[in-house]
Image (cartoon, rainbow, N blue to C red; front, side):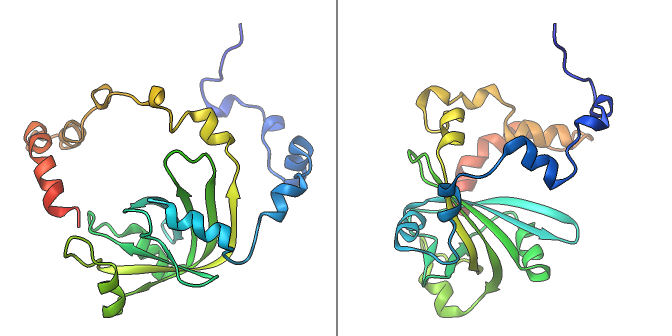
Length: 217
């Protein structure tokens, strides 16, 4: 019977890939179609995808390392204002501002857009800056609330990802959904992390739906 190694240290150096030549030997050449779809600008087809997406994962890098965080709003919240520029409002959150801290020190950014029910995703690599121009913030008003800033991304590379990952994961399938109760609640996790017993996880969970209504924007 085959067994998994208990630790990565047990894996022989001969099975560790450390060069691009080794990678190319394993994976071979990319098919032409996977290369021609990569553009240095936002085409009309790609613009349509961005404008229909209600969700994007934002990856940034800074001195402390990498960060990837979600952004979501009704479709159209991410605006392609020309063929190189995308604007994304930064809504109310937990004020960790990990992504924003990274951007002001290193402008490199990567975006992954997803649309429920659509198997392809849209990938963007570029450079970002943070804007607080009053009229711009006003244009992103939701429920009477303005974002505190807007992330402006200048596109360097953009292309769509084929559907294999979404199909394999069954992401949009109703059968793939699980009950939230199968995982620990937010309150339970926070209570476990506050080891002195001072945090009331049950009260947190009970009050969170109302808290969400008041703070979502």
